[in-house]
Length: 304
Image (tube, rainbow, N blue to C red; front, side):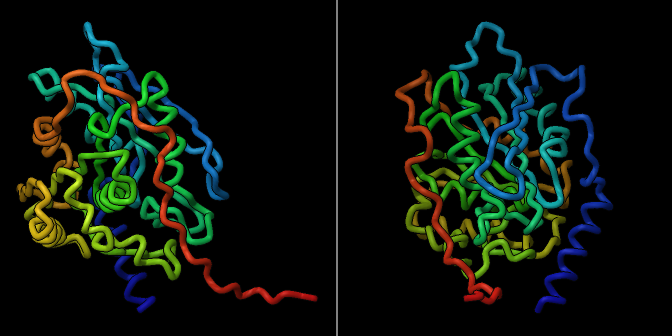
């Protein structure tokens, strides 16, 4: 089993390398409209006590920044905020110029050290606490001008980030009402033992009874044969249908790449629905705690 998981991880890395997804380009070029701000935000963990966040604000014109909704964009693994920015910002700028309602795009760094495949989770040993960081630190810092309501906030992810967007949203329905997954998955795929004995609290179907609190955008490329992603969007759509959740399911041409991601940005920009005017702010930080793991049995003997 361990050998199979290792081989699968190596195969995924090989695919991503072949598609040049591991590069760390300059996050944004001078020719791209808008403003990119780099934040360093503390995290209650051992791996990265300070984590990086990039915030892209499109050209505002006559708009006030505090009036814009906010979308949190989660990268895959291996991946980085820079890789997401390089594939997303330009098509979004074009979509906004063509009339889609603009929003602020936030690109947090969800990487980890102890459990490299972080799954955007709080690991069982608290070495990485990515989900708690997002919900209690990133959101209040990014939205310090005005805390948005759940209807003014969305979460989107690619690959591992698609899983992260789904599970973080399902854990915190008071924070989000719209979830988009691009080549995401809805099972646990914990390659580096971040979950320990706690896979149930990290499994999206555990929270299926609250999935109808959200509207969903599911996209998976017709040529994406990545394990375990193949067929996940269709499978999750079938479950959403059973609980009468609203969803859009797309299967465009393309594989597991940022070409696929960039191609979906215009559709997502049109799909997102925002309130006409800012409303009463939501609580800050999150009012629903991230589900807590059961500590794993220690292998260290206690000396009396």
